[in-house]
Image (tube, rainbow, N blue to C red; front, side, top):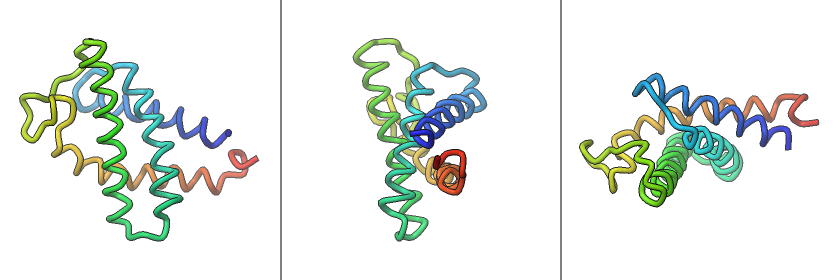
Amino acid sequence: MKKFLFLFLTGSSLYPTLEVAWRGKTHFSMAVAGGICLCLIDKICNKDLQNKKIITRCFSGAGIITGVEFLTGLLVNVVLKLNVWDYSLQPLNVMGQICLPFTFLWCLATIPAMGICGMCDRSHFLSV
């Protein structure tokens, strides 16, 4: 439970930080999405796919992040009509909620994300 909470809080801090650095603003929904993403990356990329090649794990992580962002966008932007972001002017966007070229950046971001998850597995504090 400690590990899950740590990963969720870490993801909830890192994802909005990346968004502020990239576009100058964020929304609390990105904190929730970031926490969910890091927990899923731990479960899927570091556990379920641990014996697969790194490229497979990176593309899986990119799919996780893109999928969570898409579902978050549908809820926040389409259902709740908060209009937090709109990628409709970007190339290869899907319903204005995700932009597929960013998926390749998420492949790279999966590497340090898996590293954070792995450090948690080696931490005595989080395993108690």
